[in-house]
Structures are given as C-alpha cells and as structure tokens.
Amino acid sequence: MSKDHAEWLGFAKNLAITAGRLVIEARQNSVFVRDYKADHELVTSTDLAVDQYLCSSIAERYPSHRILSEESSPNMNLGDIADETPVWVIDPIDGTVNFAHGHLHVAVSIGLFIGQQRILGVVNAPFLGECFWAVKGAGAYCNDKKLSVSGAKELRNALVATGFPYQKTALSPILERVSRVLHHCQDIRRNGSAALDLCWVAAGRLDAYFESVKPWDMAAGALIAEEAGATVGGYLPKIGAWPEVVNGEGLLVSTPALYDDLLNVLDISVPF
Ligand code: IPD
Ligand code: CA
Ligand code: CA
Image (cartoon, rainbow, N blue to C red; front, side, top):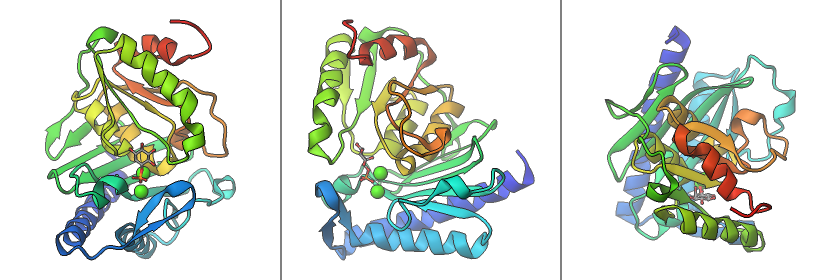
C-alpha cells in the first residue's frame, strides 16, 4: 500500500468512526428531525449534520481534493476534474429509513477514486460495531478480519440482496427482476443499506446484490466487495454522466461463479 493510500485510509477510518458516533448520539437523544426531498425521499437533520462534519473535515485536510456528497454536492460536475485529482464520495447515512425507524442496519460510507480507479472504501455500521474497509490491491476487511466472498456456485443456493428506489414510477421492471430472482434463487433480502449489502457480499453473508444506485451508495462498498473477490459489473447500459467507477446504474455484484447466471436472470428481455 502506498504512503498516500495508507494516510488517506487512516483519515477515512477515523472520520467514519467519529461520524458513526454522531449517528448513535442522535438516535439516543432523539434529536433529529425528518424532512422529505423529491420523490418522498426521507432525509433527517442527522444526515445533514454528518454530511457537514465529513465534508468540512475533508476540505480542511485536503483542500485540493474534490468531494461528491449526497447531501451537499449531489449534482457536482465531474467532467471538469483532472484525472489525477482524488475525489471523495460521501453518503453520510446510508439506510436513512432504517435510521429513522430505529433499525440497526445503517452505515456511514466514504469512498475515494482517482480517474478510473477506486482507491479506497470505508463503510462503518455504528450500531453493529462493524467497520468495513478496503484499499485497492490490499484486500478487504471487517474491523481486523480479512474478508472473502462465499463459495456460492449455484443460483438455487444463492441468497441475493436488492433494494428499491424512492421513485415509485420506476418500480415495474424492478419487480419483474425481483420475481425472476425469487423464482431461481434461494431467497431475497432487502436490508435497506446498499453500502452494507455490498459489504455483506464481501463478507460472504450474501452471495449477490443487484440494484440501480447512486455513486455515494456504492463507491466504497463496490471496492470492498471487489477486494474480497466479488465480480463487480452491471445488468444495464451505464447511462448518466457519472464516471464508470462510480456509476451504480444496474449494479450487479456477486461471487464470480454466479455472475453470468445472474446476468441472464436479470435480463428481462429474454426468458430464463
Ligand atoms: C438508500 C439505501 C437503500 C437503497 C436505496 C438508497 P439512503 O440510500 O442504500 O438500501 O435501496 O436505493 O437510496 O437514502 O438510505 O442513503
Ligand atoms: Ca444511500
Ligand atoms: Ca444517504
């Protein structure tokens, strides 16, 4: 691991752990208020407070780096960024609906990419006491334990996670894919945090995960899954302006042996 990568990783882990404490305190003290963005998307004052903490800490420590953040810069134009500029990708709370309903499946997600390479990812689940992390080429870990994907080879034994968008008009093709996966795989989970779904594939607790998500949902988790041996790809053409490494359109992540079969299941234009 290079000196830069090691230093960025240490910084990102500290940030994610401190941000996780803010999330726990907000729940314990019930100090957050709820609001809605477009399409009934819930956001709480804790999402905004944690976002503010993360972004200001990064800007102070690395003024020349850029930040793509769900809450404060979701429409940032990445087209004008030089190939060598590090870009931090922040989801202050992944699993906001879980957070607001008192569930434990909640994470702070911090990714970093440069040009076309994912460099590091940290996904901290504060209520579960698990901090997942990876650096390109150096493996993936949960706390201090090295991760590796499950050995799942057959669809009928595969436990597959997915998620649903806030935008209800987009549901129809998604439900068709869910139906096909349910018919061919062991079962489906909808745990409510894309970042943790990806880490759970890395940990071998899930065999696959598919969903169309935004860069902040997947930038960190995709690297963690990849470094644990997962195949990271997609079942839809990558539309949108996001660079490939953070484009979560039709994201499919699975054990290598399941990948092609799942691509076929998810291709709803062809019977399976
Ligand atoms: C959501 C979660 C959820 C996924 C949604 C995401 P948020 O992120 O990751 O699991 O299904 O697509 O938007 O809103 O909790 O940060
Ligand atoms: Ca998210
Ligand atoms: Ca979020």
